[in-house]
Length: 118
Image 1 (cartoon, helix red, strand yellow):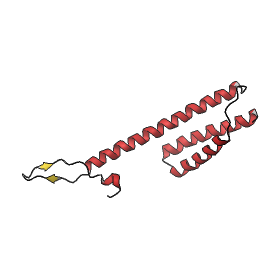
Image 2 (cartoon, rainbow, N blue to C red):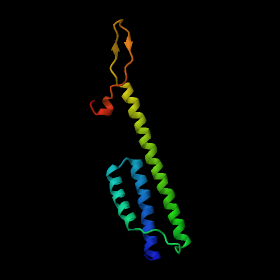
Image 3 (tube, one colour):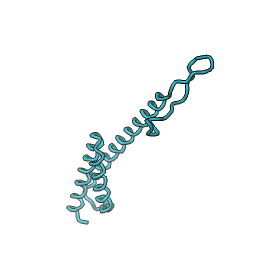
């Protein structure tokens, strides 16, 4: 692969990574799926950088690596936030129960939100 072709593909990959982040922020799942498909195809076409690759290409590759890590952290943090909220609402959705003495008994959440049976 020549240097110009490699540079073009790396620039396209950088653009896809930025679009991926934009779709994540906007919760655009359709757009995100399209970007991921394009990204997978492009990554399968790329070859490892040769030691003879220029400094400019190596810097671009490092920038892409950094942006990709940012996206991974964004997705990880978002999923963690969603899990924590689902657990919170799962604990809150339990029906109150009363014991023989008429006092309320604390039960675990019913999990209606998590099971999809709302």
